[in-house]
Image 1 (tube, rainbow, N blue to C red):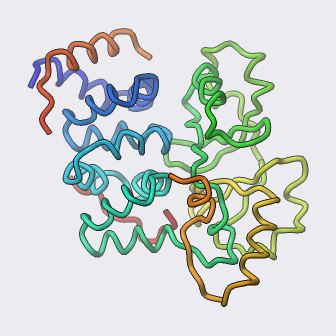
Image 2: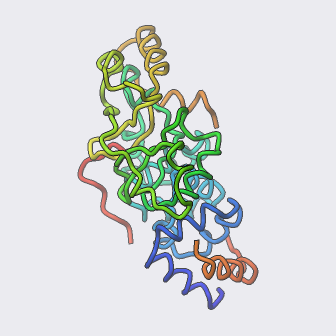
Length: 286
């Protein structure tokens, strides 16, 4: 183990948001290599502050025992957010390796009645942390996995939905500006447990291409477009009530700190890469 690793751990502990941004700007292979040599709690802290999709891309490259350690160390909501955007094969492998009671809680949080919003939300849309910069957001906006339309969804450190920011506004601001200062609050949300029929004709849609889907604690779970809601209503009418599913859209889609970057290079070049459990929330949606 390289002697520089403690400095990296200290950096993550003191500024996990900045560490997450650094990891997201690395290639997935390099980010995973660092995650693999960190203590489990440091890996969990950094991954928990990354966008779920970016974190999941790292997690699926790790050995199963390492994945289990990290998922058990992350908060329930953080871990569920990562599991939600993993492909079926990797998610099932992780769930099968977890303790039975914890795996059962995760499965419960990831499944919804077929006529519900949760069954049809797009779970592969990663929200942006409000601590990210405009430059971070614009880089994300170029990805194919971002939402349709002009809005990006923003969350706080606890993954609670806090508002949206328009791409058209981002390009008018300095790249170092922080999203927290540009958020449009009061954006409409819909519960993952709501029925599609109850919201299909709601005025909430307004001029929004998609609505943020949230759990009981206000945690961001995904997005729902009007067209997907209509598809869900038709599909639910063809199946008996009570059928439960992960988000259908998941199956349709399928499977910056210079010193820290320099330190990361030292770790990746010199380290030999060898292959506290948090309490669960009293109630959760994932």
